[in-house]
Length: 278
Image (cartoon, rainbow, N blue to C red; front, side, top):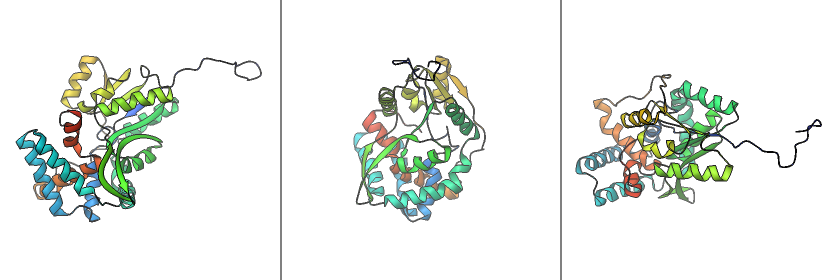
């Protein structure tokens, strides 16, 4: 820029930096599926009977193994459950749940870190396997205007049960690379934050990978790669392991609402060849 404040033609601009944040147990101290799940039951989208059926389907899958037929059946049950749900009702429930349940579960450390990146002029992107309708109100709460999330097909305002894009595992890494090319991000200078080993492809994409409250496998990878490890403690998680009384419905809620996150680990294993994880 010269003395008159004009930019020189062809002036070199620094590459843009992005910060990619996983959602569950990285930004919020719980699973988004469980956080929203109780409200889906309360509003009649998931019946206790359906929740129990999904709980049994999940248990059968875990015990029986990874056969193609079993994964197909579980995937079909999940997508059949959400088919016919009105997208506007889902958005309204998500907004109401955001205020009363999800917002208090956001880690204060995550809020501060997002604000830190924004103050540095970095683009912040939340990248989650949860459906767009569940991620959007959380992003809005945090002042984040870019998200990458699972996309579900709709027709005449209702979900068809078809998954258009599943934002998990390698798909996250592919989307990060696409965004880098589209927006000019320097991935070597960019950041990624996650708690789960299922996000190793995403973390390996950037020059500054950070493990947040990592699971055992991710902790080992972080130590081996000399990645930073952060511990977020505030708030104390609002959702713990369900009691015996809640178990028949509680676990089913997670499995059922996982349909809204594109079929959870079952669809991930079938389509992407990954291992179960959050």
